[in-house]
Length: 302
Image 1 (cartoon, rainbow, N blue to C red):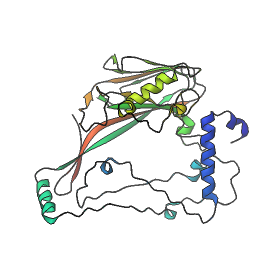
Image 2 (image 1 turned 180 degrees about the vertical axis):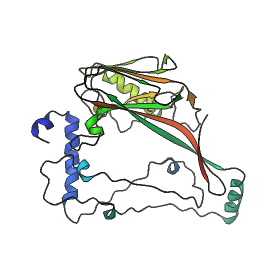
Image 3 (image 1 turned 90 degrees about the vertical axis):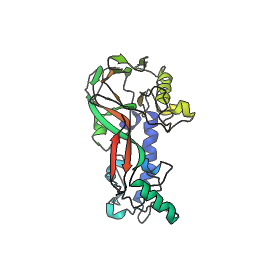
Image 4 (image 1 turned 30 degrees about the horizontal axis):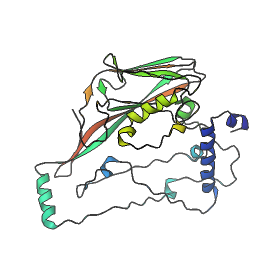
């Protein structure tokens, strides 16, 4: 990436590239071993309950090409970056619980009559083009007559979405959005259109407040990874969120019924200077059942 292209980026995009390059240098040094620890973001591991004994779980991991996290370095060091599945070792640490034999037999006997239930969040994603020069976009019925509990919308450059190495695939920008609204069965919901300024960030705090509300931060009285310094005009984590739960409490331990209806999403924006992609992400509640013969079934909540 040349100097002109770099200086044309927003400040937080420049900082993101600096951090990526600092991380990337660790991969150039020969013989270094990287150890990363995480807890898989899988609902089954966040239940506060045990997994049924002898249940088979399979996890698949996919590697990005090295050039992606090198962020299009123009003059990388001569040492070749090696990223192969054979080079990466995955170690899983499990907490095994020993049960009293009588408790174990009683539990397995109950499962022959009543399956074990685990509430899960099922997600769907759609993408739509926002053409070069376009000043509006209408997305009709993206989820085939289903109303998600939560809808999150992000806009990014199509080149980034398609994996161009010198673009950030997670740089969701405002891109001159004037307003965005959700229509459910012909009625706008929430009932107040989210209006922003196309050329500055004077109304961005209103948009960020809507984001916090729809993502549950306000009733939990706790934030998330997206701060106000990341959201809005000239920033790269501008996500538009809509909550379709009446009380807004997505995380309560109560299953929410799935509504049926037609959703339309209207976006009004300044004329686009390049091709963009609109990503629409939806969340639905579902249940996974595991029966006495270890058969797993996932079903919707109606």
